[in-house]
Image (cartoon, rainbow, N blue to C red; front, side, top):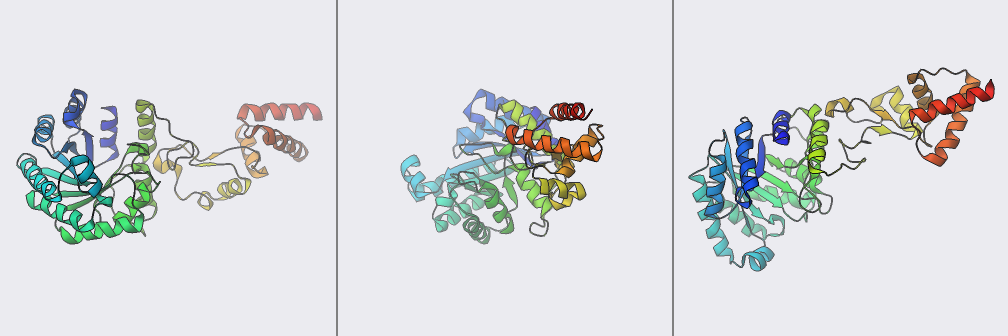
Amino acid sequence: MEIARELDRLGVDVIEAGFAISSVGDFEAIRQVAAACRRPAVASLCRAQQPDIDRAWEALKEAARPRCHIFLATSPVHMTKKLRKTPGEVLAQIAEAVGYASRKFPEVEFSPEDATRSDPAFLALACEVAVAAGAGIINIPDTVGYTTPAEYADLVRLVRSRVGGVTISVHCHNDLGLAVANSLAALEAGADQVECTVNGIGERAGNASIEELVMAVRTRPDRFPFRLDVDTTRLVPLSQLVSRCTGMPVQPNKAIVGANAFAHEAGIHQDGVLKDRATYEIMKPEEVGWDASRLVLGKHSGRHAFRERLTALGVELDETSFLQAFTRFKQEADERKQLSDRDLLALVREVARQWA
């Protein structure tokens, strides 16, 4: 519930709160999120089966904007090995399930699972069947993280050309590290909705990361001229909340929300940032919820950053003492990689004693 409320404050359009039939816990989570979050749509995932849809409706019937998200696989390997159904049987099941859901829900989304390994012509036909049955959102999932940006963009264009008047959504997994790149390519190709997760969490290697997607669109309006009603200053607090609640730490070099995302250690970078942040920062840390940039004092740091840190610590040295301190700092940093403020003060005191 904490995460759902924070997603609502962030400004997301839809919260997919769980899979209602999967467990009592998921059912209750969906019901409570729907009661608390009245602005965004709240969705439950469903297989293309009436019991799943009925259970989702029970969880969401009091929601301000209830959404049913139905999925059924369309790739040859899934239809043959997992579903053990013919393509014709799959199309019939899509029509029946979506039609049933659309009689209950004001918003129905359909996902042809494993879309990127499906035959494009059959995929487009499955989407046409879903729209004819009442789906208002067609999602094109890269379920196993298999596709590439150009290929995915072509698939989005194909589906868009075959089904008009509906929302085209994309849902990318990160098995090849391309989830965000594929999602952005889909936006350029005409997608309307991007399904993503905080910190990129999700099955296997995870899903497209909301913080990376949002800031890519915000930072590059020349490439992505879209409006996002997102309060970007809440991205870092939300990331930290999700990390805490899930027990999944964020790697320090994670884009946007990692501890080192706005940290500079190289002397050339530090000198540039101290003169003008735009030299090495394409966005302001305050825009995403960090307090400020951070200069890391290590073996690659230069005199400019070293002097700035000493000044911030209230230490003023004459030029001779400063050069002596800086030389000692570089020697220490070569061995210890990084020095804390406490280390710096101890180093300065030692130099001062030597020159006393």
